[in-house]
Length: 240
Image (cartoon, rainbow, N blue to C red; front, top):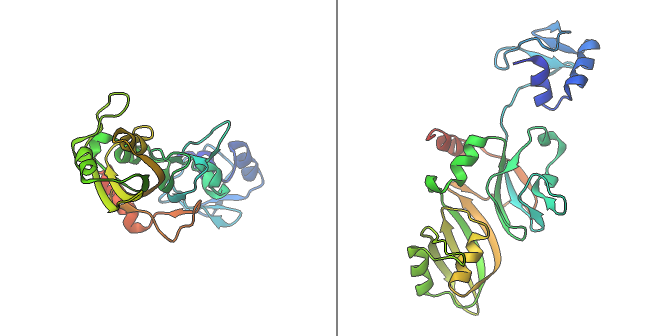
């Protein structure tokens, strides 16, 4: 990889900024001052320093966020605040994007990464990665609804949803449920309940496969994945 590309990817600055650092003799490779920005370097083997500080190259970033309501799951939006607006400058240079979609008013687990292969594995309906949600529902949720979800409800546009696993936690005027689905159509959970004559009043994603929301994260907070969480994600990539 070119030296200027590596340093730029690590957030040191633009390629123009990197050239200025080189001109000021502030970049060394294996202890030698370097002036050539196009120099080829090995991110695994070479000792690269900027102003005396070691630069450790990292290609991908994997962040778990407890999404706050009021933010859309997008990288940019001309009218709404996005989940990217919640990120610090030190991770923005990786250009992470949200994996899958959570509605503006929905809370809970959201993975942000720049790893497109992993994103595909998590959101593709063909991969059957279960996404589990907690929700409150206006109206009595019944065993008949559980059966309807198991068989796959037909949405208002005629699309038959893949079977979902509905669990009733509490049934009443306001019911509490958990539901697991393996696809992510627009407003899917809300539309599935509308198909059985009920309305979602609160929705929170709890997990994606074995990746579970860290309940110590406050709304809007995020952290990098743990080694175990990352190992699970890599196991999904291995199935490509």
